[in-house]
Each structure stands twice: as C-alpha cells, then as structure tokens.
Length: 269
Image (cartoon, rainbow, N blue to C red; front, side, top):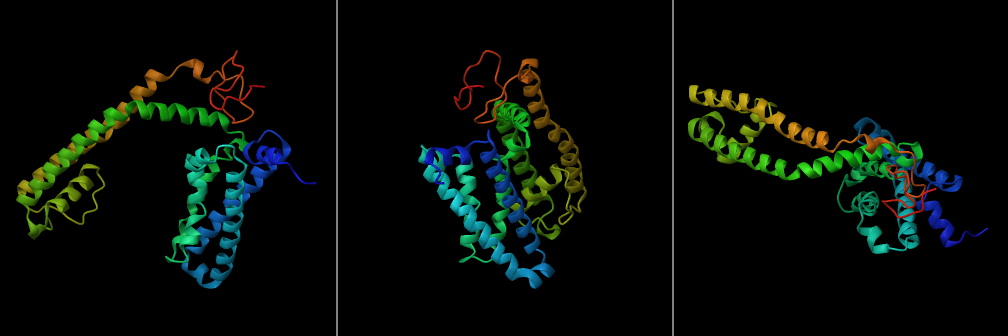
C-alpha cells in the first residue's frame, strides 16, 4: 500500500497516532545508536579493534539520516522555513560531519551533535511539560540579555585593566609575556578556576591577584541574581495550570477557552 504525501507528512512531522509515534521511536533509537558509535570510536583501543565496523555503522546511520532529511524537505509545505529553522539546521548538521570526514580526518566524531535531535522527539517521552519550563527559562534569559551584556562589558574592562597591570608589574620573567597573556590570567583568576600555569611572584602582583580573586566571588553572583530576578518577576501560577495540550506540536501552555494552539495554530482537541 502506497502512502499519500499527506499521510507521510503526518507520520514524519506529527506524533499523535501509532504510526507517527513508531517513526519517532525508531528515529530515537537511531540517534542513540549513532551517538554511542561515535563515543566508542573515540576510544583508541576500541577504534583499533572495531574501527572498520564503527565506520560502516556510521555510514549506515548517515545514509538513513540523509534519507530522512531529504524526506522532510520534500514533505514540508514550507521548505525554506524548515531548512533555515533551528531543527532544520540541526538535521543538516547531523549528517554533514561524516561527509566532511572524506576530506578532514576525524570530523565524523562531530556527529555527536545528533544529540540535539533528541529535542525533536522529546514529545514521545511525554516530556512536553518540561518544554514549557524551558520556554519560561528562555524568556527570563532573553529579558536579562541587556543587563548581562552590560555586565560582561564591565567584566571585560576589568580583565583588560588587570591583565595590563600584571604585564607591567610582573613582566615576561613571571610568564606575563604580553597583555593578552595577562588578560588570560585575569580571566582564569577572576572565574576562580586557577590553572596555576602562570603565577605572580612580586608582592604587588600577589596583591593584585588577591584583589581579583575576591572580586571573582562577587562577580560570579551577579548574572545569577539578574536571571533569578527576571524569573521571579515573570513567574505566575497560571503559567503552570495547563489543562490542555496541542496534539500537533505538543505545546502544553494552552489555556482554558483556547480553540487553537498559540504556537502552531492547530486546533486544540
């Protein structure tokens, strides 16, 4: 029995019947399989022993994902919108690394980017409610963007000043061979990472290092406070009183009285 294009599109893009959910489950297994193969292939001992098998499996996975990508491009009524969308770009990036490996060695290992494709099939695991929480967090981060940009500009200014001071005070003898190296040290110290590859030896340099370490504790708390403040302002009980969900896109923030999904426009069941 030959399926119509409309039926195929429903199976590939939807998840509200047995056929479409089976398609998503098979896709989920393929994604997990390809990620596991890429991870195992990066282990030298396994690569030496099973490298050829891993390569054949990777080619098979890539062939199937390529067919799926072509199928999605053919079935969608808005080809350009799909190709340039987030999921369209992720679907393309999922198959490109293997083709690039024909020209650049080991780029096939970048196929682990396929893990992002799990976001597409997350609805089959009944995790749609977490997507609403993710939207809430994304909106809070977006609202905090301007404040965070100003904060990062201030941090970069501090890093530039402290890096320059350390270059002047310590000099090449202590490993501060240039201002960029001093800035690298300032970033490592300010974030309290402290690799220890470059350390000040003069009293003034150690004093500056102590100041930037103390400053680091205060700076780390700033972006957290900005985002938390936005989350507190945006959080409303009604955001989580979700009595309906869209059967087409899985959007669960459908309020009582809505006849159509606010996200995809589909009719709410």
